[in-house]
Amino acid sequence: MGKSLLSRLKEGILIADGAMGTMLQSRGLGTGECPEQWNISHREEVQAIHRAYLRAGCNLILTNTFGGNRFKLKKFGLENRAGDFNVTGAKIAKEAIEQVPLSNTYTQPLFVLGDVGPTGEFMEPVGSVKLEEFYQVFKEQILALVEGGIDAVIVETMSSLEECQAAVRAAKENSNLPVIVSMSFDPGKRGFRTMMGVDIPTMVKGLSESGVDVIGTNCGGIGLEEMAEVIKEMRMLTDKPLMAQPNAGKPMLLEGKTVYNESPEAMAAQVEELIKAGANIIGGCCGTTPEHMAKIVQAVRAL
Ligand SMILES: [Zn+2]
Image 1 (cartoon, rainbow, N blue to C red):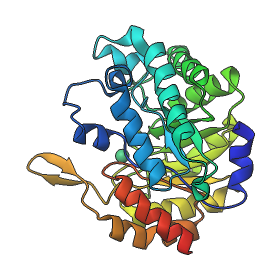
Image 2: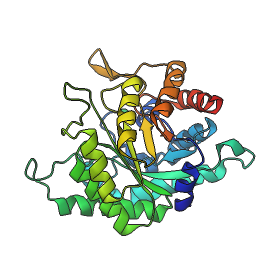
Image 3: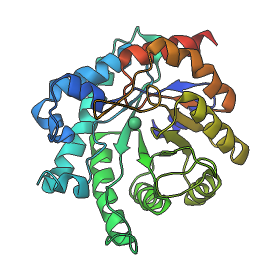
Image 4: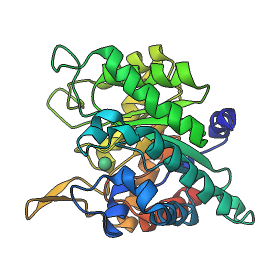
């Protein structure tokens, strides 16, 4: 399966799913609740979200394991559940794919991407965590995802290149699956940078040296139009497949809450820009729903 994801990418655009967090909240996940615990306590709810994205026509679904690393889980006192949450998260996604009727051929092939998010910790000397500790934490998560049956690893919403590289090494040394790394950019006077100050050339060079298979960008303080600029800049620097997962518009503050308001139609209308810029996988980040992805699938097919 792993190899066929990369070979399938040579044949055309693939569509990844939209937000998981937004959907979990709409199904009752409370603030302060651990989203990954829902893989055990609300298994059916999580699987229903996967099915909704598959029905929308998405080819790739991400496991509900974004915060499933020991450092993040520690904030809920659940660090010893990391293995359990990740194995189950992968199995739920795998089963959702098996439940999709075979007649639904245009959504084939379908792949499960094991989702690995940032640890929320900082590496020495900025923070107190050693490079080796990052490696161990990612290794634990990735081994569990592999045990659950994922087809590829996606390391996403990252802002530190060193942290990305620790995750990539953990994935490469403990699996033979393709690895996608996606970082989040904000606009600035000196061009697009991550929160930790990484620019696009530094990212592309660093990740290429680490042997990453797909380079991407998701989330961040940018809308779809600016994301197309990020992809364009990446495309000038690499021949590797590129992945773009925009939020549903630029983040906006409404009554103290961050909201993403772009409609499915408005997003779908701009998707051509991402493809022209060089994107090979299109997905959605914060605020995107199965309705957004269904419109994006339609727009991509029409091209
Ligand atoms: Zn996001």
